Length: 82
Image 1 (cartoon, rainbow, N blue to C red):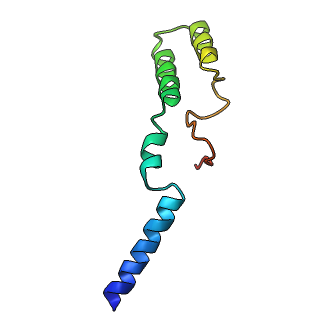
Image 2 (image 1 turned 135 degrees about the vertical axis):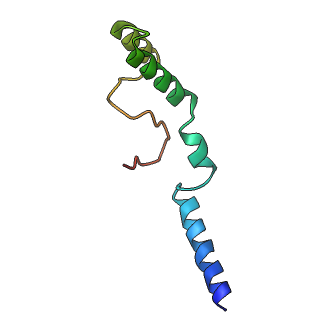
Image 3 (image 1 turned 180 degrees about the vertical axis):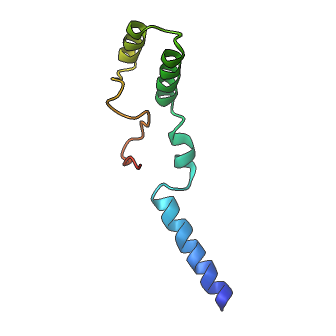
């Protein structure tokens, strides 16, 4: 009886984690979108000094990105959690 109760609790917990996006394939691929990866690489190159601030801003505008205005996370319909 105890085993069945624990199985039910575990199943319910997994259901809610997957439903809320805390666990599952959307969690694994969300942070690796091509747009987010391009923004991350651009920011890293600027931080290392590989490109000037003018080059950084020009390339950010090509990505339709205003640095500092949003996170790299480009998931649609998901709330940002801190």
